[in-house]
Amino acid sequence: MDILGDRKYVELPGETVHELPPLLVHEQPPVRRLDKVVDMATNLIEKEDLVPSYALDAVVGEAESGRRKMDMALNLVDRYLRIAHHWQWGDDVLEWIRQCEITFESKPNLRALLRPDVWPHAGRASFVTLLEDKAVPAREGVDLEKAVGLRLTFRRRPQLDVFSDQFLFYLDATVANSAYHTWASMSHAPAGDLPPERFQVNVLKM
Image 1 (cartoon, rainbow, N blue to C red):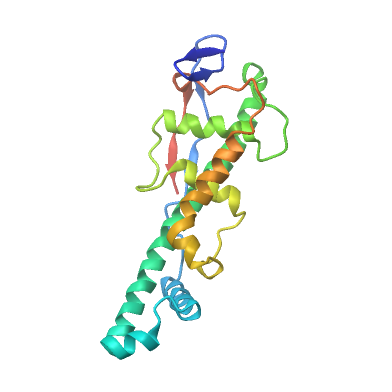
Image 2: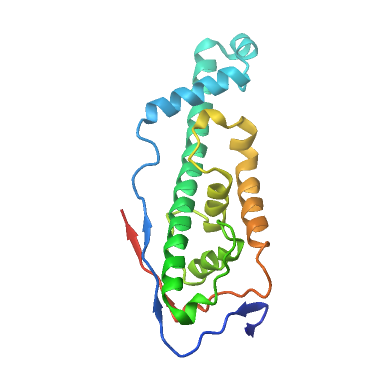
C-alpha cells in the first residue's frame, strides 16, 4: 500500500498502464416530452399550494399570479432536469464499474484487488475516485459523487411528480451526497485508491 499524504494507493506490480473499458455516457436530453414535465411541475405547484393564488389574486391580480406560478413551474423543471442529468451520469458510471469488474477479473494481477461482495460493492467507490483523479470530463455542472449517490438512491430515474418540493429545492444534494459517502465508507479495510497513472480511461458520448 503506497501512502501519499492522506491518500492510500494500492500497489500494482510492474509498470503496465491498464486500459479500462470506455465510459459510455448518454448525451441525449433526459426527458423526451418537456411539455409533460412542465405540466407535472404546474400540477405540483397547485397541489402543494406553493404559490397561494387566493392571496396573490387579491394583491397583484390574477394575471400576475399566473405568471408567478409559471415562473415557479419553470424553476422546478430546471431543478428536475439537473437531477435527471446527474442520475443519468450516475447510471452510466455504475455500468462502467460493472465493465471494469469484468476487466479486473480477466487479469490475474488485477483480480486480487476486487472483493466478492454483494453489488453494488462499496469498495468500488475507488473507481469513482479514479475518474475524479483523472479529471474525466463530466457533463457541465455534474458532480460525480452526487450523480452516483442519486443512482444509488433511485434504481430508475424518477419522474418529477414523485418528488416533494422540499426535495427539489433543498434536499437533493444532501440526500445524494449522504448516500454516496455512506456507500463509500463501507469499504472493507485495507482499501486504497487506484493509482491514476496506471490506468487509462476514455469517455465515449452516445
